[in-house]
Length: 380
Image (cartoon, rainbow, N blue to C red; front, side, top):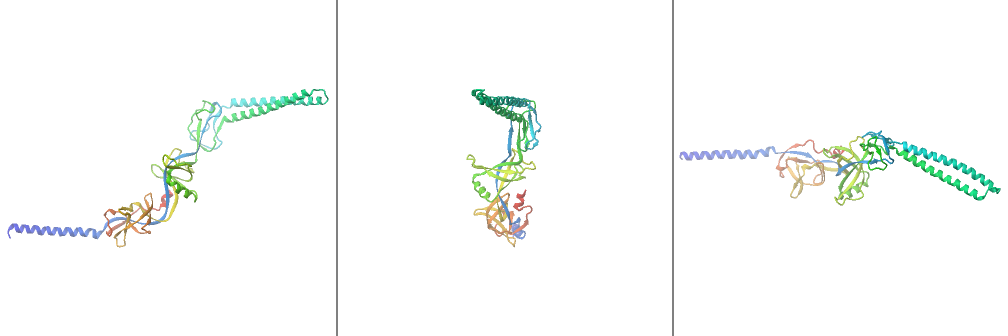
């Protein structure tokens, strides 16, 4: 063999040794260590079922305080933003003209009472004289009519007095219910017109307070069925951060469905003792309609989509995986309720599924911070 032949033989031997080493290394690595995956346990727990919608906070009651009598606005004892109690004075209109009108009506009644007493005495005298034929009957009848006229005048005076008292009472404006005073619409010193278009101020009741939210119309039946079992809880969360704000109770759905949007409005009541809800605030509302007891749950990311439906990879005792078909009945907030395929406490692959096939050996690592009970999440 020449020099060229010996050189080619050496190259072939070297390539053979390199190929055998590479194949041996490739075959040994996955078989020995297994595919690294993160696993979790299928838990059995109670899961609340929610319906979610976008809501708006509304004052439980709102009143625009407008003047029922005209006059100069003398005082606004209630400050802007102040919480007031029912019956507390919040505005004062100059009462002097209405006090004078009341005094005038009282004086007129006193005058008419005096004239009635005089006319009654004359009637008594004429009646006695008529019995002895010293006075004509016509004079008695005329005097009796005079007495009746003064009696009617006194009734009119009483009505005038009541009207004057009512107008005088309108000069003092009181809170119709406990609530919060809004911003002034008219300042002290202005002349107020009776029944004008501008309110002096507004009072809103924010303890309790209401939240109105919407749901798709096809969810109304589930709400109505759930209401037959008792009051339904409603939780509101921040529209931006998603943090829980308050928990209340559903009052009622609206009496009609909005045909333009295909939604139904629902109203809930909240105590709002901490003032965390404010009229006009946008919130997310979730209505709990039932609780699934002893449900098998998994983190939603553990459930995979395949050509034949949903499935999970279950880790067997020998650290190999099996592909298990499952059915999911409810999915909320990263948690899936498995209604078919699992019985609970199985070890399920939560991440790393892209490298798995049935029978693959894995190196499982327990997930942390997942699979918290749904009731804990709902507690807020």
